[in-house]
Structures are given as structure tokens and as C-alpha cells.
Image (cartoon, rainbow, N blue to C red; front, side, top):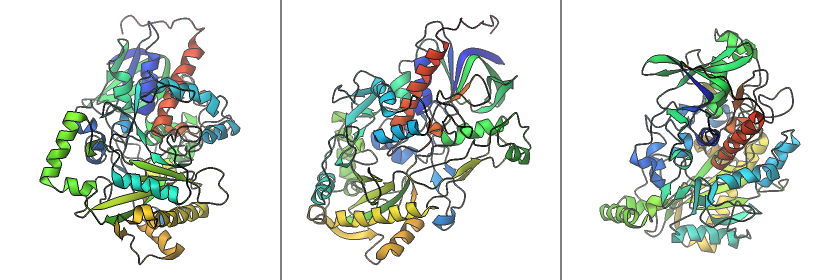
Length: 541
């Protein structure tokens, strides 16, 4: 079977939904959005705290793993990624963070023309429907719901007070003029329900946008140096979809470079090893992988003030369910961090270099059951890691997982930063504001003392905070994968729009930045095609 469209968008994740919906705003243009996963019918996808049920779901997540990480004692790290409409925005922790203005100004300094903070701010604002209203930095009326935390529980408030006690400013808006300080997170939710990219941009679905689900892309169609379409699988049958204008890859930092390599675009030597014909030698594809690494300290509380106590009680569950059903409030509205802190722990840092996610519950790990005692977690991640990893093919089979080597903590600066952040966690716990709620330190425990012990704890227990990026790096140098207009170097009619194009990972959660990338990609495509004649259509198609 062969279909035809003006634009094909591969991947209905954070960026892909924005690209597809904005392109479909053009009258007379046909857009097709391909998604490997299915429709978002599982109810946990719409309840904020449902990420605990969906991140490792066998059908809703790709459930990827890194290879054995040398600096993490050879451990494989789980990398859940969304395999459903909305992509990872449908299973993430909902926290709305753009990163620092300096992140985008740094992209511009690296040669990414049009990507300074002043350049990207209009696209952030266009996406945003912030319940606080519009101002010079925020938008209202956009597709993406952004709302305040609905539950200001006392132990999260104590964390904010603890940060203030240590001299950090209280920050009412981490996406405002300054990121540094402590405060309540805003989340991608509307009326107490998750607002994924699919919910934001595809409800209702534009009339000239066709969505094809359960349709993983197998390879790109390359003809005379141009991307002419995509081959995808559906119901065990391979189908062909041809593009009259452009194909946009929005598969994310793992699947976008993987699809490129499966199509013969990448490092020729590696492709030869895999038995794949090299159609275009572009060795930077899959390199420059970056991710935020987190270390989580857990504390026993001395009173029943945490979600553990609610979730481990029959009547607590009933009350929580009623709170959510009647008022869209209570613990079921929790994100993967109710309160946060952006802080500088390294003397050479001019802006915050670590981020804290405070959650009023504790568990053996993400997606695992809650502890049977009152507990809370302070998760800390490094914002600008210097370690770099890679994505390579493990097999020419498109259904096989790619080889992921994150190389966490391979650079000394990263190790020093994580240790300094863990020491700050203990100082927060020792404040008057927070210590009054603490019975004892559960992880790593008081026996872990000194830099070496804290580094060993991070190596033994640290994990991803789910922000892989950088594997199709944007730039104007010969080593970049895409140029500043997100066009793949050396192949016409093909762009990449997702976290993979980030030259350096932003200082914070990546979902908002990915949506902005989608918005900006669509705007650039519209501008580039504005003066072009309408493409010729195949009447039979």
C-alpha cells in the first residue's frame, strides 16, 4: 500500500505533536503523523501521579536499557520512553521547566543561528496556556496547559523553608527572570488532569491531519539525495508513505538516530559492521549523547504526613480517590516533584548547576511500590553534565533496541558535582525547618560519610532522570547533524525536531524545550515553503 502527504511527521511525542498540528494549520496541506504506539486510552495516562503506573508499562513504554555503565559499577540503567500518543509527555513527571536563558544563548554562541533565548521565547509563549496569565515571559491561550501545584502539603513546604534557611531565595517562578532558588513547581496539567503533547495539540485533531497509530517506522525512503518518504509497519504489513514536501523525524534522542542509521545515514564504518548500505556518511549521528543523572536520598518521617501513609491505608486510598474525583485535588495530582530547588554547588558555576525534586513519598525506585513507613525523597540531578555517550545500532533489525552507552560520571567534574549536591541534600535535611519532620536518614544512611562514600552511593544507586538528548546535534559546523533550521546535512527534504537536536542539554526538565523545538520547527518549515508553489498531487493517492 502506498499513501501520499505533503508532510510526514515520525513520532507523536512532545515535539512531533506540535510540528504536526502547526503544519496542519495551513489550508490545503495534508499532514500524516506516524506513531509507533497506540491511542492514550489507559486512564492512568490522564491522572498526574499515573506516571508511577505507566513509566514501566509493558505496552506504554519502550522500556529501554543502557549497556553496563563503567562508572556505575557496570549497572544497566532503565530508560523508559513513551510508546503511546504523546510520547514521553504522556508518561513523564509533568514538571514544566524551560531551562535557563543562558542555555539557549549558549546554543547561539555555538553557532545555532536563531536559537538564543530571545529567539525561542516567542515559541515558548505560543505553546503555553498558563493559568497565572500572560506576561512578557509567559503565554495564555496556547495549547499546552500549565498550572500550579494543587496540593501544598506541609512537608514540601518545609523543604522550601529549609532552602530559605540555608540562604537560597524563594522563587515563585522557575521559568521567570531567574531560575535559582526554591519554590513550588508548575506542571503540564489542565483542570487537574495531565496535559500531554497529544492532549494539547491533537484534541480536536485538525481535519487535514491524519494520525496513524501502532505504526513503527522501519526506514526512510531515499531517492537522488532526497528523503521521499517512510516505510512503516502496521499489522504485520509494511506500508509506504511518500512525502511531497518534507519528512520530520521526532522520534526522540534514541529512535531518531536509530532510524537514520537503519536507513543508511550515519557513520559508514558502523553501518558496514551492521551490514547496512551507506547511503549518506554522517558520522556525528548518535554521538554527543547527554542525560541528567540523579541521586536520590530517602528519609524516614517522624509523623504520618507523607503519601506513603495514605497509599498504605485502605481508607486513605478511598479518601484520595474521592478528593481527585470531586475536586481534582489531593495526592493523585502529585507530579514527580512537588517542590524544587535550583542551586549552585560548584564554585565555578555562574548559574544553578543542580536541581532538586522533592516528593512527599518514598519508594525502592521509580515505578516500584512505596515503603511501608512514612518517608519522603530528595532527588538531586546535575544540570549540565560534561560526560558524553552514544547511540549505535546493536542489530540491523529495526525491532531491536539500539545500543545505549550513557557514560554517566565519566568526567571528574560530574562526579564532583554529584557529591557536592548530595552534601547539600544533607545540609537541607539538617535545617530546623526540615529536621523537625525527620526520624532518620534511610538512604544512604548515616554510615555513609565523606566524599568517597557519597560517590560510591551515587554509583551504586544513581539513575537517569529521563532527559536523553543531543544525538542529532544542531549547529553550523561540519560535525553537526542538522543545521540551524533543523535540516539534515546532505539529505534534502528531511528535518529532525526533538531532544536529539540539542547541542547541550537544557538546565532542567526537557519536555517544555522539546515542545518549543516542535513549535519552532513548524514555523521554520512554513517560512521556508511560503513562496513555493503548491506541490503536485498524485490524484490516485
